[in-house]
Length: 267
Image (cartoon, rainbow, N blue to C red; front, side, top):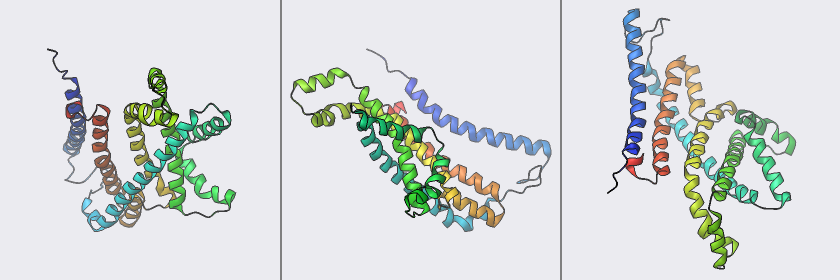
């Protein structure tokens, strides 16, 4: 009888172990520096006195910023997946009238920085179209199209990866093109698309940190407001980084479970 491979379990443990090692290493460096410099608790060589307690009275701002970030991410991911699905299927067409504009859209968004795109959508697009839009609308439109460009290539690659024999067998059974796509190709392609789709969705969440340049009240923007009010930027941005990590790390573990078919031992 074939024995189970212990490697997937070790991979799952290493993910949690790495996080613990990072925390322990940071604590160790802090303890060594404090011992060598002889500084009192909470102080640094520059005389900075850490005080995370000042953030407590701003907890409502931090929570609202985090909730805004998560809701905004869900909306942008959903819209991006819709754009990516339509664009990815369109890229499989044989008519260059359809494929050339779609490829141009994809390459423009993939080959330019998302921060530049955000600024352009907010400041330049209203000038070109004559349509005024708020920062939230401009950011939503930009990130949805940005994510859609990447989702499109993921969808297209997943469909192409399906064995061509599956298509031939479905056609031999008399399936229409829609039935072929819905019953045969997409279910098999989706399994291949799960890992890159999850990774790109995680990137979308991290990209929301750029919304602060448009004064969209996400977590980072609220953190900037608090830092200016308290003159405690180190505590604020440290807390912000921890908040992003606390959200993204479980999602990353869940994405790895999805990649391996949802089996807990293959995390």
